[in-house]
Each structure stands twice: as structure tokens, then as C-alpha cells.
Image (cartoon, rainbow, N blue to C red; front, side, top):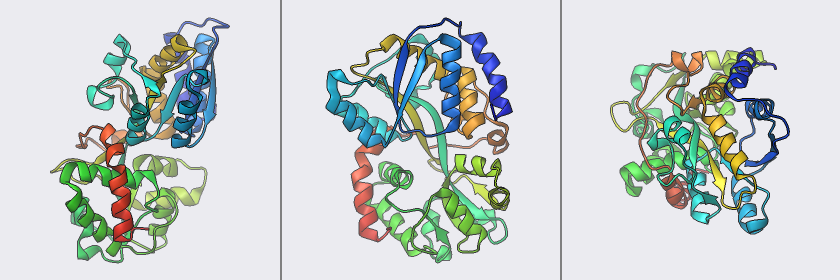
Length: 339
């Protein structure tokens, strides 16, 4: 394995799960596309003899496929990276509840569906990233303050077609109401340094190039860039600061990666076993070491980089509601000109 931390975790995983060969398979329809996930699939097979077949794709398309296939679907588990999408999967009727003592122990109640149709695997925060050269962090405070005139021509964002900012805006609708959320989105659109473009990494690179001073980014991108094989990405990340907004208010926006047991799963026992594996401490620490995400299991240690960011307050919302408010968020983005 390329990652020495994950190599060490393999030994731990094999100690937790008794190896038994030839125990079948579990079919995972996943919208996560990370190398660290593939390594965990391999470790589960080594520990249990169960083969993980991963079918990757766009989350809404995977939900539609599972729904269309009905009882004949191959899917045992659905995994994705957004609470709103998990809520949409539940609402579409393709998931069934899964509750075990291990689930209750390893997933805090605010990071799982109240009816256990989906369970959180990891979390990530959408933070403010800023130029260390041009921005004094004492000038930063809240998401709302980014709409103030002082930031005109200084903010960088990705396209509003991206799910990350849609869910951020949906969370603000939930917390503050649509009218206030619309004013915020309009203020951001008025303060943009350029038209929205690129992914989160591109926003950090644009800060380094002097095209803007601030950006909205997910925390795990910073971890990936700081540990990149590309020295330019490392340099960019080292020259940007991280700010966790709204610490005196509702807290920083958090989104969730999660898993749901498919309603017509053919390999239910294997699927539940795999869920419990992913929620146990070694795999949770593998997610954090491999992709710089926050574990949901409170007993799991965060990667040392994440630990260095200290403690912070996070939003507490019903993640299912992100999906409910997503159409309103999309409407607002279109109305205010956030392309």
C-alpha cells in the first residue's frame, strides 16, 4: 500500500475481523471515488473472505437505477457524499432500515437518519480558505459577512451546479429562512472575483495566483493538497489559511458521506457486516488517514492534520432536509446570477 498509515491499519483490521474464506459478496453502488475506499474494500475481503463489488457512478443516476431495477437489482448498499442525496434515496423508497448494537454505538444520533435508512460514514466541513498574504483572519467571522461590500471582487467559488454549495445554501435556508439565504447568495454573486469555475482545488490555486482572496472549500481538499505528490499543490495549500466560520452562531456547515442498505439487497447479512466494518475504529481511521475526512465514530482518532485544526462548532441540522431544500437553493442561485 502507498499510504504507510493505512498499511498499519490493515494489521488492526485483521485483528478485529476473523478471516473466513469463500463467504460470498456484497455489491456496493457508490458515488465515492477515492483510492482509500478501494483499499478498505480489499481489507474487508482479507478479513472476512467477502468480495466487495463496487459499481461507481453519479448518485442520482444510481438511485434511479436501483429504483428502476426493483427486486431484481444487484445493489446491496448505496454510498454517497451528501446528506441531501441520502435523504432523496430514503424518500425514493430504495432503502431499508438497518439498526444493530454496533450501529447505535458507533454513529451518533445526529449523524444518522432518525429511522436508520442511512448512516453517516464520515463528515467534511465547508470552510473559508484565504490568502495568508492578503487577508487578516481577524477580519473573518461568518458566512453572512462574506456578502459585505468589503469583499467585493475578492471571492472565488465553483459553479452553483455543484452539490457542495447547493447544500451549503440549503443549510442556510433551513437555519435562517429562504429570504435571508437569498440575500446572502446575491451578496456572494456581487462580490465574485471572476465567474464561478473549476473545482475546490482550482479555487485555492486561483487564490495563490492572486485572482481572488477568499474561497469556499471542503476541508478534505486541503488535506489532499498538503499531501499531494505535486509540489505546486503543496505550495498552494501551505500559503492558504483555513477559517471555520460562525463559531459564535450556528457553527460551520458540515456535510456527510453515508451508507444505506438497499431495500431488495440479496446479500443482506454481508451488507450489514460490511457496514459495521466501515463504522469500526480501524476503518474509520482509515477514512481519515486516506482522505482527510472526519470519522463519525467518536472512538476513532482523526488524522493528525485534522487534529491540528482544533475543535470547532458545527451546524446541527436534519441532513434529510438538505434534499428537501435543494430545489429552492437551485432556484435562488439562478435568480441571483450565481452561475
